[in-house]
Length: 107
Picture 1 (cartoon, rainbow, N blue to C red):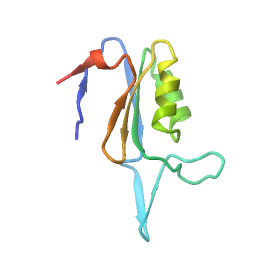
Picture 2 (cartoon, rainbow, N blue to C red):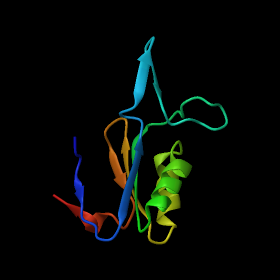
Picture 3 (cartoon, one colour):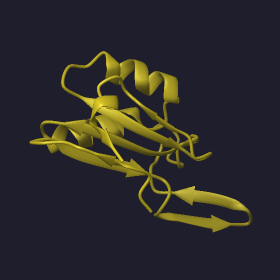
């Protein structure tokens, strides 16, 4: 299900999330994005993180690097990067985005 549309030209949009590939057992949900320190799924309220960048490899790098951080940490870090934007959807259904995304949102 789409939460919205972003207009973009000559950009890549890469999304990582915990909302599709998951397994629930004994009331505990496990997903495929792992914490490299523990080997277990990262604990986060971020359901999905999309990176908008010129090169897809940048999106892959930044979604991997940032997933598991708080919404505030992600926004702060991406807002400090040139030519990279982010859209974050939380498990509660809230949507956050970096400064350069607002003018790209279309209804």
